Length: 214
Ligand SMILES: O=C(CO)COP(=O)(O)O
Image 1 (cartoon, rainbow, N blue to C red):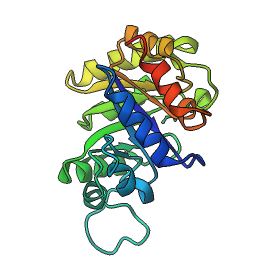
Image 2 (cartoon, helix red, strand yellow; image 1 turned 45 degrees about the horizontal axis):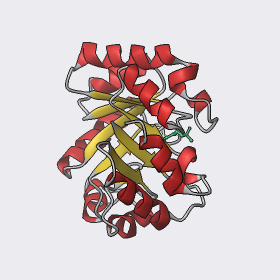
Image 3 (cartoon, protein in one colour; image 1 turned 90 degrees about the horizontal axis):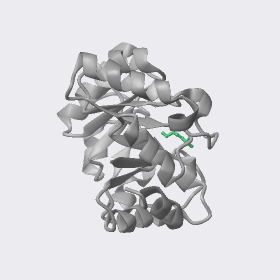
């Protein structure tokens, strides 16, 4: 299972979480990675943890003030990027452009989507993976794998019907090892989570709990 920890703009110490993700990764067969804010990418990557960006823009080098260029993200040490997170929604053409920009920079891609229909559309753009995250469950602590198992199974079916090579993650409310196991049982190849680790008093303990049954 792939466990991708999105730090959003939570007021956590990104280096503390990065070191915890790195250290717990060394204890498990699961693959763990962290997605800090763009301004923290370089320092987080220097810890040796697998580092992802939260977003790249559908742009190339040039006059794009305030944008995030995929090549700069890669130079900062990221190996992948989220695209179209529920808190950073893009138009379809821009999702496509961001996937192409990430590919140009050799970044792995996870395109997020709200529901199975959008997952099918996202999979058609040829990312490495898609992630289904019902917005109403994000940050609630109520895991999508329990509250809405159909949405995960339907997302897996939607992606497979478009492109078998696109893996499916799920997210929203995931915070325990049981939630991760339930996600896997529904056909998900990984989970995307945030508050369960970024807002935990002890992020390393939270991560150990997440991977314990894997
Ligand atoms: O948006 C999410 C991950 O990108 C999910 O957030 P929570 O894990 O806080 O529900």
